[in-house]
Length: 387
Image (cartoon, rainbow, N blue to C red; front, side):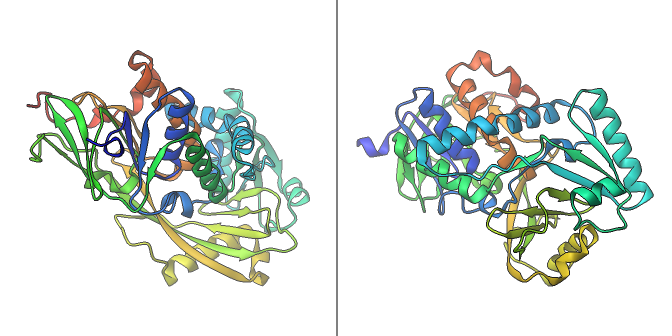
């Protein structure tokens, strides 16, 4: 095969997850990395996200996923600084913090419970009275009862993050094939032998699937192209719609969560409001009902958005596994096959830790214990044994 049709390692999917893995592998010394993306880099869920890095505000309990998410969030200061040095792209990491506001007795009880277990577990969280909330953010509705302030829950401009990562991997020598579809992952005697794409067959020994909602479209076949008795993990699309308003001067300096929605201030004066959660819908499209629901949720947080111009709407497809957890690590049935998919609402948040842990698992399989709770093998239904 010619050099352009061989690689040491192929990554299928060029969102923030695939890009971060490519960067981590190159920084770890892997020489010949090829990344395949069906459209433009970062043009799917990575582009549509709000860039919120807030594991504490969304967590109901302390578990392995919560700890993983907190570890990844805490990597972001160094991650953003390194990308700035590598590419001169500022990802606009904003460390102001996040507010979670309560408007009903039920909301207030939820806040009290979250404050109790997180403070007991020594996570940074502050409880604010109604007066304190309004003093900190006057735009919040006067009907607010209490709020929690999470100083370590922050945000990043996800589209600038995509740009920085794309620049980083290009400069590092990763071969990138955009507008190229991956059809089949070829296997022979339980080992990866390559990937069949719309641009031809690429011979390789290692494949990382970071294809998000399109994970299930990848077929596992033998050398002759016939399906084998193993399927890829099922990843369901969950559509999320977003609304963008113009807030000049800025309406809020914090990300603010309400019971059902959130608002996110951007440095350039945009104010994002989100989001819907529509399982099983694979069409990227905004609807009147979705936009109305988002605006109703945002109005509950801050009635002042009534006066703001609406400047944009968009939607994206979040990749969700059956149990809602990411699918990370090596496939126990095929040597050289790794997954990094199913990040659902946490792709931007989990990018740094995913890149680091997947690279470690590939280079030192004995060092993959941190990925065990998220292993693709938890979905295994067919015993090993491929010819």
